[in-house]
Length: 381
Ligand code: HEC
Ligand code: HEC
Image (tube, rainbow, N blue to C red; front, side, top):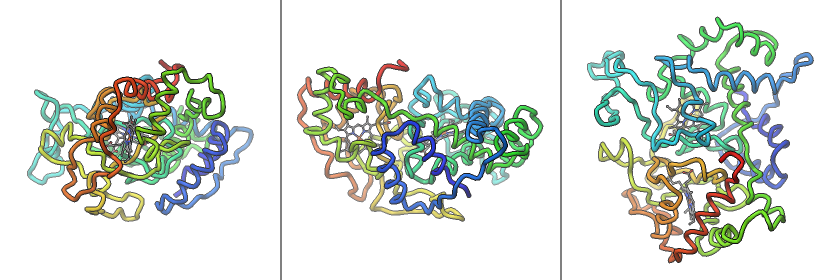
């Protein structure tokens, strides 16, 4: 398997300050996902292979024929005009009454475990988790809220066959559809020298495209680079709370604004877990997809821990947290000020750094301004 890391490095070199690249490669090394970096071998004629690959990835990303029934593309859930998310607490996949049927023949409806929005049982299929933004996802070695995938290329193979999302098959549906489309054949030829549609080529192309969705030039970045006027007074005050009294930097340190680790902050349940009365154990119970074959992990020491998200563009990527429990940044700041929520892990994993902060109303407002404007900027608002 060819990993995206080398493509990342090339793209990163265009947009990332050196310190960030160094931090990112460190993170990649310590990620422990077994990813072996192999150089890209795509030197074909006069075509810039990376650009052709990116075009191919972009076409796939927004192609609504890649689901069954048709109508759900990657870009519908990771929508550029919604901060590369979907503005919803939980993701919404294919809509189809037939999903209540018994296609796998086990005597039970195939989606019996899935509760959906009121009145539409089995019709509107909700994912149990919030759709994360893919801004800057190419920099990190741990993908998904529980880190179960290794990198963007590795991740890109899964949504197509996920029942909650695109509900189809690479071999039976997607690859034949792509092979029969002359526009795809041309893009494949530009990128790889011939028109053969393979899953590996397509997921590499999706990863290459996603690696272009990169933002490391927020007002915060300008400020860190010495442009003191990049933040207004209120945002500077918020910066001080973030890197001081608020203790945010302990898990969201500069420059990446994440340690790339996992923590239990006590986020309350929401979505299908709340309806079922269950608890999402996150990093504690997941299938490690980076192993071949995948390995089921059950580690009580990690129950209810979730990935510490990178916070750039957070002003436009709500609702927040792994399950969309909070719809505004005010709610997020209030949550932290109160010392997070109750420990739902049952194994005492709540992070000791999550304690009541005693922030004044002014400090809270400043922290929100820092998140909403300094980390986001106003280019796309
Ligand atoms: C039905 C909505 C939906 C569709 C369609 C969808 N996704 Fe997602 N995506 C999600 C949700 C929900 C998650 C979080 C799942 C989790 O963490 O368990 C996610 C997670 C991701 C992540 C991880 C980001 C991170 O930082 O951890 C990437 C990358 C991603 N999706 C890319 C894609 C690509 C590529 C496609 C198309 C092949 C796609 N998605 C299709 C909803 C969707
Ligand atoms: C102990 C580590 C830790 C500390 C300290 C911490 N965070 Fe977080 N942060 C996390 C984790 C883990 C998540 C994801 C939690 C989840 O989804 O259940 C998160 C999520 C967030 C999110 C939501 C991002 C998104 O895309 O959904 C924001 C915003 C945020 N933190 C801001 C802050 C601020 C502001 C502070 C300081 C007041 C802070 N964090 C302190 C670990 C931490």
